[in-house]
Image (cartoon, rainbow, N blue to C red; front, side, top):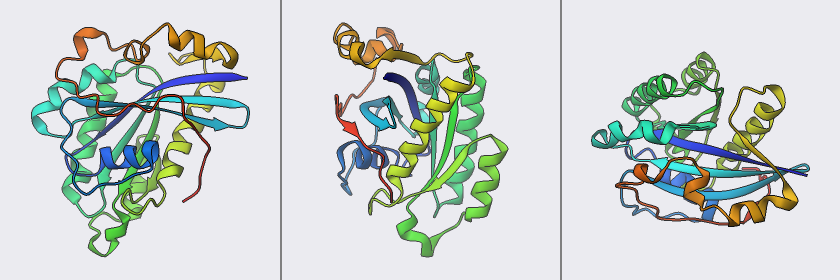
Length: 225
């Protein structure tokens, strides 16, 4: 059995629900009162797909404009990106496209891209149509999913899609920087290296970093919405 370790960056405008979406999946919880992310937050989880374990090392970046200059340090060696917008905010959709431009400018290796429209529980206030979002996702070679972090709708599908995308990336090209291990050796390897080191960010890049939640070693089976 193989274990694929992938670095995932989560991008998007402030308030679109990036942190809520990650916490809903990793911790299966939701709160209406989340402090805005400062720098970035780090999360980790495992997903078992067939006979392959995919370990996601998730960097949830701050969406405020004043932190945008810090974002490129978290892009380095990223294997996948979740680009999140709020379906009730056209502004967040347009802002998201700016994050994609920056991502593409800073990452040359093949990546798994997933555009996520959050807050479908507020669909009556929708400003971005599903067709518009799908068309944009296709234009950048990304998949598209809609979800509600609050109601836990579609969140599992998003992360399952990313994990499966990383498996395809590993199988379809050698031009990637994924870490792949024999599953029986992964615990020993990870025990000799901190989670931060495993992301290849380097100590100098943890300045102003808020590591607010780390979920170690919990295997999450793919789940449907």
